[in-house]
Length: 183
Image (cartoon, rainbow, N blue to C red; front, side, top):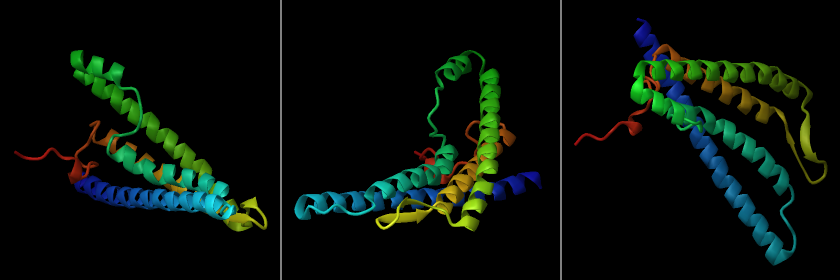
């Protein structure tokens, strides 16, 4: 029963992480288009696209936190594994336990960030605060706060699944596109 619940939770978390990653990729493509339009407008018409600076600021934060959970899911989060690899060669169980502790600490930190950001999202939703230069470009803060809280919460879930399954790369969390091809 617990195994099927974990498998179901993993499928949901995988699907959401993949979808958020795809949205982050679309944001990157949108950013490329906006930057190219700005460059052409500056060069050809001597009139830059208004709000490009603000859009870049917004986009970078959105891209990072939209893609964070999928990066955690496929074990591509930047970290130094040199020491763990050396330990793994001599004491594999100790290295596995250390990885489990690192994943647990990571889950705690991601959970804390989500816990802190969700009230910020609610505040920004209520007050409709915005950033930017009035008259040139403005955007509300609440979508940024929501993406940060959601991305960290989903990352927390994925790290927690890695701790519960006691594997660095649990089968339940990984998607089939990362399996080794059969020969």
